[in-house]
Amino acid sequence: MGRIQLKQVTKSFGEVMVIPPLDLQIEDGEFVVFVGPSGCGKSTLLRLIAGLEDTTSGNIEIDDKDATGLPPAKRGLAMVFQSYALYPHMSVRKNIAFPMKMAGVDQAEQDKRIAAAAKALNLTDYLDRRPGQLSGGQRQRVAIGRAIVREPAAFLFDEPLSNLDAALRVGMRMEISELHKKLATTMVYVTHDQVEAMTMADKIVVLQAGVIEQVGSPLELYHTPRNRFVAGFIGSPKMNIFEGPEAAKHNAHAIGIRPEHIAASLEGGEWKGTVGVSEHLGSDTFLHVHGTGLAETMTVRVGGEFNAHHGDDVWLTPEADKIHRFDANGLRIA
Ligand code: ADP
Ligand code: MG
View (cartoon, protein in one colour):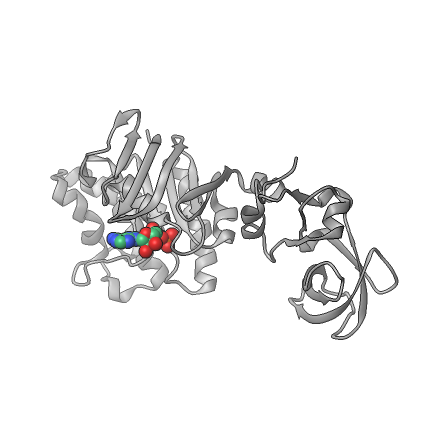
C-alpha cells in the first residue's frame, strides 16, 4: 500500500511561509510528478512527506494513518536523491544490502531481495563491483536498488536524473517508468523538467511559489491548462500567449495558441509576419516570427521540409478550436 494524503499542510522557514495550506491526495500505485520552477517548494514538499522536514501545521497521512510526527524511518518510504551517495569502498551488493543490514533482515531474505532488485535493475552482473567501476546511470540504479530492497510503501525521488547527461537521462527515464510498471508501487518524483513530468507521470502536480496550480494527467494539463502559468509551463516550445484586440475578438483578456497548432504558409493566411530565427531540428523546424502585430515573437512548429529563411514573409493561421482563452486573472475561460 502507498496512499499518501496531505491535509492543509504548511511549511515555514522562520518568518517565511514557503508552503501555504496545501491539500493533495496520492493514490496507491500512482506515479505522481511534482514539477515547477526552481525554488517553488518541490523538494520541501517531498521532504515533508519523507519526514526529513517537520510540517509547520496540517497533517500527513500514509495509508490512512496519521504520520505527521513520525521520524523518516517509521514511515515506510524510501527516498532517492540526485546525488546517489553510495559507499565507495563497498561492493554494489553491500551497498544494496546496507539498509537491510541496518534493519536486521536475515541473510536469506537479504539475498533474495538483492537478487530480485538486481534483476529488475539489470545489475546482476555488477554486484561484485565497486561504485567507482560503474557508469553514472548504473550508480543511480544501485541507489534505486537500495531503495527497492526496503520494500517501501512509496518511493520518493528528488531530481534523480539531474546529474546524468542528456542521452542517459532519456534512458533512465524509461527505466524508472518500466520499474514502476513492474513494482506497481507508488512513486513521487520531483523534477523541474516538464518533459520528464509529461513522459513519466500518471498525475502531474504543477507548483508555483508553494501553491498547487493544477493537478491532472499529462494530457489534461496540455489540453486544458487551468491558467496562464500552467499553459506556459507545460509544452515545448512554449504556448504563444498574447493580449490586446485579437484576444478581445475572442471575448478574452488573453489568448494562447501552441506552436504546433499554427499553420504556416508563404502564400497567405490570417496573420502576416517575418521569419526571424528558424531552428532546424530535422524532423521539425521552429520558426520565430516577428511583426504579426500580436506578440513580439510567435513561435510556430512546421515540418522539417518547410522552406522559409530569415527575413521571409510568412502567413500564420491558428487552428480555431485550439485557441485557449484566459481572463484578466489569468484563469482559463471554458
Ligand atoms: P525546489 O525544490 O522547488 O527548487 P525548495 O523546496 O528547495 O524548492 O525551496 C523552496 C523555498 O524554500 C525556496 O525559497 C528555498 O529558498 C526555501 N528553503 C528551502 N529549504 C530551506 C531551509 N532549510 N531554510 C530556509 N529556507 C529554505
Ligand atoms: Mg529541489
